[in-house]
Amino acid sequence: MFDAAATIFDPAFMLAAVPAILSVGLSKGGLTSIGGLAVPLLAFVVPPTVASGIVLPLLCFSDLIAMWTFRRHLDVRLLLPLVAAAAIGVVLGFLSFRLMSESTIGLMIGLVTVLFTVRHWLSGLVRRLAPPGKPGRLAGLIWSCLSGFTSFIAHAGGPPLMFYLLPLKLDRVVFTSVSVFFFGVINYVKLPFFGALGLLNTDNLMISLALAPVTLVGLAIGTWMLKVMDEALFYRLSYILTFLAGLKLIWDGLAG
Image 1 (spheres, rainbow, N blue to C red):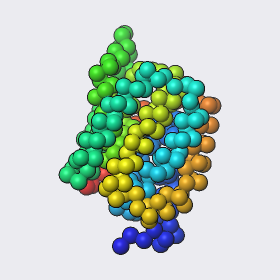
Image 2 (cartoon, rainbow, N blue to C red):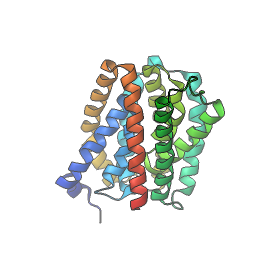
Image 3 (tube, rainbow, N blue to C red):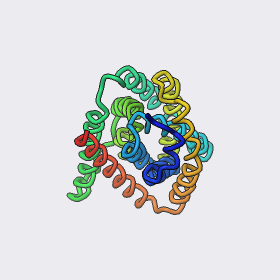
Image 4 (tube, one colour):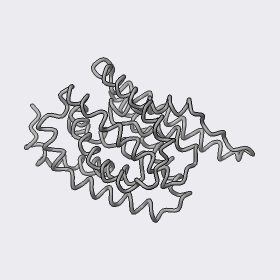
């Protein structure tokens, strides 16, 4: 049986939990793609559903800080339709949570993510004369819905959203602000559904509370990196992290 008190003081758990929760803070500070690593890392030492229940309160906690930090840079017109589509994805995730395998979903999203980043790198390698066209509004709604779905299943909504946002080539602060508010709203939408599934029990919440300071450290590091990092390097790193998140999802899917 899962015991929160024993888990918190388990060295093996902390070895996985600290980098996992650091990635949560880093994702809210600007490195959005890395946030999808939190649940897979924690799933090495606790069941995936327990990992999801631990991570969500920490996401909501860091979301408040991140949204306040980036509130002045938000593109509301870009955000609102994306959030509406993602909310539909959250509902679909809730309805199918007990019916679908996490590993199967992770495998599918991982494959799409890797193909997306490889396509981007190959298009740059051959130096096409015309840059790839920006994705349309319908593509944004589809990818946002998928992001809400995968965010509910395994807090892995980053790659689908990146599939839409990265080609837009937004200013890095606007890009981060839209990402932060998108997942901030969606994570709070997920709370009652997680409660209905019994994933926000006392044990999970105790562990979330114990790990909250680690989230703050990651958030501070991520925000600092966003300020000092060159914009070209920021996007290069975002694509690399998106690719690595995709590989991790593929690995978990095949292992499952």
